[in-house]
Image (cartoon, rainbow, N blue to C red; front, side, top):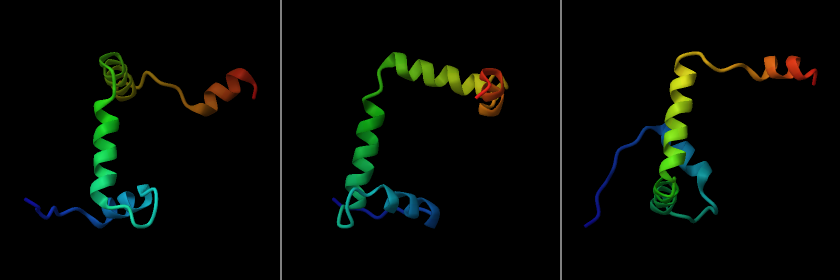
Length: 72
């Protein structure tokens, strides 16, 4: 059974940019995204969650600070 899904124009534009070729369906783009998400290992998922927490808590530094520190 097929169905219709409503999405914003912004999301539609992003999905369109993700197509590998012009005739690729949006369903294939979405399946690729789902498969990518499912392939994350448990360790990767934990690391992502930890990184998100550190960003929210302000425990990160900007690339500019890193460059200054390394004198790049």
